[in-house]
Each structure stands twice: as C-alpha cells, then as structure tokens.
Image (cartoon, rainbow, N blue to C red):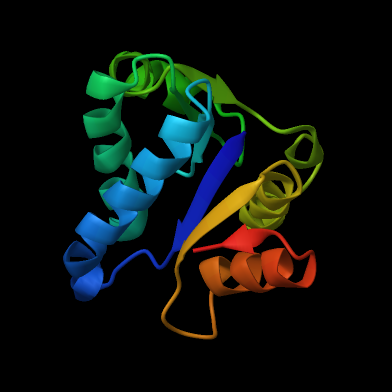
Length: 146
C-alpha cells in the first residue's frame, strides 16, 4: 500500500488537521503494516504529514517514509544528504523526471506519485498550484482521497 499527500506550500490552517491526518494514517498502517508513504519534502502540509509519519513509526516501525525528488542535483543532495538519511528511509528519483526541464519537474514528479499511489491525503484548499493539479489528477483517476 502506497500513500502520498498533497497540500499547499504555505497554509496556516494545517495544524487543525493534524488529528485527522494522524488517525487516518494510523488506520492505514493498522491495515497495512508494511505501507509506504511517498513524501514531497516541501511545504507546510508535507511537513505536517511527515511529522505524523515519524510519530507513527514508533508504533509501526515497518512503515517506510520515502522522499520523492523532482530533480537529481548531486551537489544539492550531497549538501543535505545527512538530513535526508536522518529523516527518510529511502529516496526515489522518478523516471519521468530524468529528461524534463526543471521548470516541469514538479509536475512530472507529482503525476508519478499519483500514478504509483493507492491512497492520496489531500490538504488542498485552493484550486490553483501544483498540489491542486495533483489532487485533481488523482480525482480523475479515481484514486481514494481523504
């Protein structure tokens, strides 16, 4: 079972969702103790979800927290490698991002995340931006969203 999430980079109201997100993730982990969470690693909603995953890993140590990177920049990754190692179990650079211009990397990465997910947790509040486009794409594909 693969779970991913999308939300806007900056939104002050996300903390109010913490309990709902944590209980949803907990229910998923109870039914699928080997589940994987695909993380975007950027923005308020991602940070909130990643903190919930860290809390879940105490009870469900076999779940995986995987960082999905939109571009492969060796220099940047070497700078933050220790951070990535301390926060994530794995990192993936999806194939659709290999040959696309950086301007479109986030779009390709988000579509890949939706295409490979079983469940989407959505913190989308507005109809614009990358998170909104990814959630709409997931809705059209009829992927379960919370």
